[in-house]
Image (tube, rainbow, N blue to C red):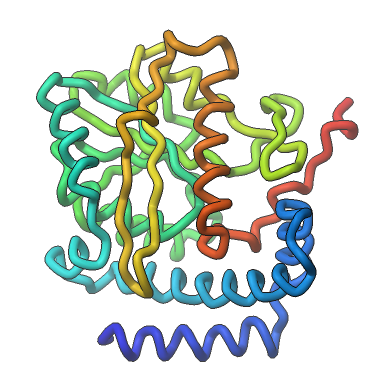
Length: 276
């Protein structure tokens, strides 16, 4: 399906999702109100519409992965030149790394492009889906250009097994952990439980953690940014401080381009004061 038709389909989905079905509109607006208490109600309503438009684009773009060519993939989602230079330097030094990013921008396309352009073998940590058929479909899309997947429960075991491979292992930072075992911090003006798994693995394997920003250039085009100043060395941080550091970088990225984050997610369903 050509991109112009693809985005026509996205426009139809937007009308259905936003105006007809009203999918999680209250959830999104509450998330936005709590995250941006300094914005007016009108600004929040405009931002909500933009986020739904982007959500529909993301949906059709994800399924475009099934047929998109390698050439088109790197044209629509590129890696910034300085970021490629940083990756090449790390690869030349034989350094395997951990990547951390959020559900912001087209993270699915970012994985595909990274696998096509980086010298590192990309491993992505994921939750297998309960629907077997949909899980197989997502697995096919995510591995089509060479990315390898690791089920979350097997993360450390598999990373140790693959320790001799020049690799980049990607962790999604804004998923919701069990509140009792999470690290709690203020994120987007709210008490938020976050995973510390990335930091713990980085310390055990002595690997650098790099925050990845997926930035939208225009409709259907993105660039991946890995800034050298956002290379985090475990030895430079006290316990939990590295986790807070990469979450702050994600927070800054969301504030800069809020409509491309996944606001439909019930990110703040747990409260710190409800923990026994």
